[in-house]
Length: 599
Ligand code: ASP
Image 1 (spheres, rainbow, N blue to C red):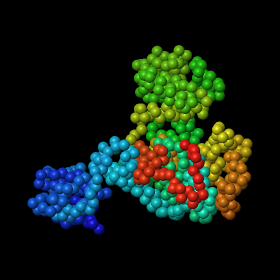
Image 2: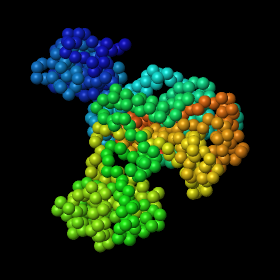
Image 3: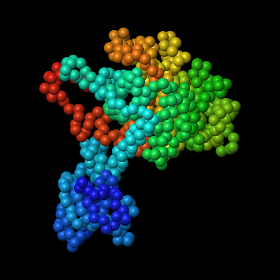
Image 4: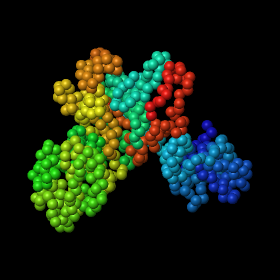
């Protein structure tokens, strides 16, 4: 080893020790005679001092040294002079008096500062192009360390719970998760392709048929989706599967794993214990979202029966037409201006709502009354209507009531985004809270207008709830599934389900999804066969590692916690991938590029 110690570990009790350290020059200061070097490695920074009177050769070498050069120092640990300690670094009580300085490798001037966290402001493309420099910055190093700790905790925890870590292939057959496959042409079978796994879904189910009972894997998944800010073409999941379980077994295990993980790895974060568990219906009703931000309340309230009795035409008729009227109370926001309300109306419209009714309770008495409101429905409202609505929310003067009326499928998401936006504006979410929770019993199918067929909401291997199985052929849209998501601060961070393990039911679901007999045989024959050899009941879940680490690290994008991410266009700025195929590669594969390849 070229180093006896790391740059972060030396303390006052090491004084007088002779050490050898090596790393990168973080900063160099030339004080005429003395040269100071802050030397950095993964573990921290230590100050080195080079005195021309004592070590003239070392001093001469040090004069040439610049930032980011790689050097090795041999020397003695000494206590700093009283008053010159640096409390901002952990080694701040000591410094190294260099006996020798060796240059291991010089460096070009980096394209951005590494010793200055302002490089956050550096263009991200440049950071990704020079990721190997970017990750020398302490904040990036910390993110990678955090990621390591999270994954290590998951491994150790599941190992102790009796899970086996099993690797599954990357070159595989398509396994649908609702995205496009990345395909790899086969040289040995010209014209045939492998698909990179969108997830190890079918393989983990086959592992259950294989009697493994408790499986996990830190699995890479590949999905060729259109660019979205928080998606990567390849991402990492903690994939797990268990046999002989029901929903609560999987959720209990996941809850314990994440509770313990957060307490150990990021003890400064708070969580809600136990994790709230809501059905999909309840989540839509109370929060207007299937991934509600549970960090704050401001829940949506049902106003339909009040609206029906009221004198306000647009509210009354919405209910009479079979719709609903719901709202939220933004406490203390009565002073919202016309313009601010107009922005909220636009937001509600973006979800398909016709509009949004605001009632600003601007009066200054104890009691809410028509003389103290600002609202587009002020003329139609009676004193009784106002009392009933405000009373329902327990709203006071100073508050802002926001109401949406219409079809339930529109009202819920419209109020969902309004609630989220107001929660942000009102700063209702505590910064250190990770509000994890589970959403259960999602619908099994979703109607796909464009294709004129049913799609799986989760994936086609998800079991319907027992009492809904009979609806597969009659009423697919009403079937609820044995699926669940884990959410955190408004993000979906895991999804999973209890699976179908009987061949007949799986066949029925494939048929309901519009697969032909041949397609079923070609794509899923192996799974259906396996189900004929004693497949146990089983289920699992797959938390996304990138997004969870992003939340733990207080980062805004998953790219900050992925060592070598791609841009939104799917390009790796470091290596330039993807690059055009070499003609001989194409020839070997029996492929030709079309004259006008699609954009
Ligand atoms: N394979 C699923 C997914 O990637 C997770 C699961 O059902 O376990 O979303």
